[in-house]
Image (cartoon, rainbow, N blue to C red; front, side, top):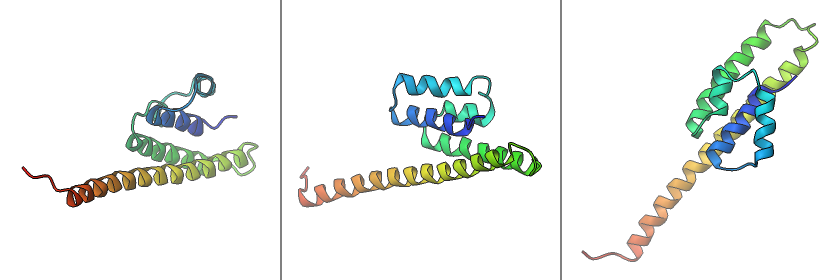
Length: 123
């Protein structure tokens, strides 16, 4: 059993943030062998937070449908429900990351404006 959504999200975040080492990337890619399609592939190959959010949402819909179709007596039911909770939590983390990034951009704009107000440039 593997949590393809989380591994694909890790790869996407490594792409976007420019972090991670080769062994981490190799491990995630190995976990995803044979499963790189649809939202999982989109997550793994994402180049922006907006792409990650879009593909993660689609992956969540797929996972919710998978859980809804399962019989509660299925031996994988609890694990799959756990995956769903983990991916929902990851979605909230990505949303926080996006909001923090936007806040940084806004703060830099404010700092720029303050600098020009404090030290006006005459033309």
